[in-house]
Length: 173
Image 1 (cartoon, helix red, strand yellow):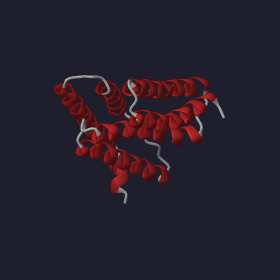
Image 2 (spheres, one colour):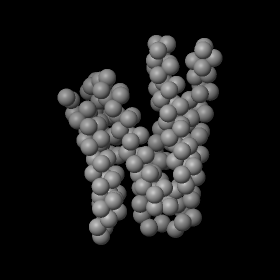
Image 3 (spheres, helix red, strand yellow):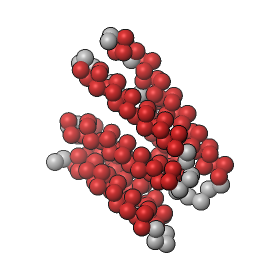
């Protein structure tokens, strides 16, 4: 297994560790969980750079890397819903967008096309990661609301962009 795949696997392994730390609730556990989230997020940046630079793109990486990202972000947002820091409808928008875009990619793949991540998807990911980090910190409720709003808006924007740019795939049904 190459280094990028090992980093992706590490990110997947860190997700239950992240959740156990949050639920354990020892003094400072939120900050330990935040550190785990940041480390896991950085493995995503690192594995992508290494894979592209060294030509180590694999089927495992194509499958597991985006899955690991979705699992990590969903875990954090589930925690925010549980503690009342994020409304469930906001998480539902994020999850539905991920299912819809993944479904679109599967249909495209069946037709021999690959849908690469668009610019709006990268903005969505960066916004979400920054906002999740901020939401683990003791910020004012208004800033939490701004973060939730930014996550929802960028999620919707990128989802709509994927479908508009690839409407020919849907029209070919």
